[in-house]
Image 1 (cartoon, rainbow, N blue to C red):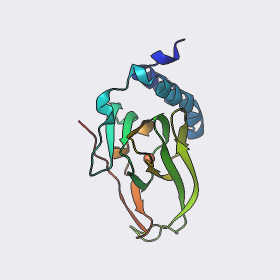
Image 2: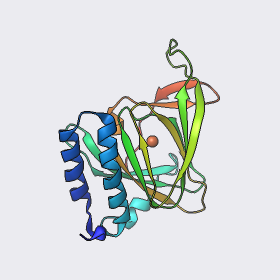
Image 3: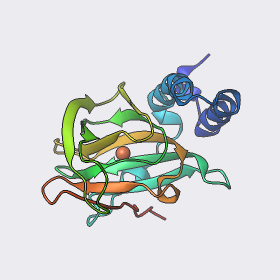
Image 4: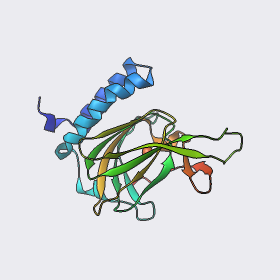
Length: 189
Ligand SMILES: [Fe+2]
């Protein structure tokens, strides 16, 4: 088995098999983790120069590698501009992120408000992890994280989601303003 020849179609087939076999999110995440890591380590078989492209307004670039017709099993490559990132957000589904190149600082949060006011959210930081080449960050549905590229170069990571995040009704949060808003990302064409 050549670890450098694990392609995105092979990853997708394996993730679809896992999702068909298991209902429990923890089981799915535990099985997808090593698959995403293997695909990240096989970057030479699928990474293209265009995947380092990013939207300057957004701060990162989203490159769709696979999405089922019902939006499930979405695989994306995300390029993070230097000293840019994404605000705290959830995904509305499970997520497994494998570092491909460069560091991405993740901060993790939990909601501490009672969710009684629409659009209002209070978050408390509960941890952080720098995800770089050879690292994996797994996020169950509902877990909130922010991402920041503290380096001077574009960083790249491989994201596997239970459903494309633009179709889950997920949220972004503002720590200072204590707000919750929809979070739709621009996907590169
Ligand atoms: Fe995320």
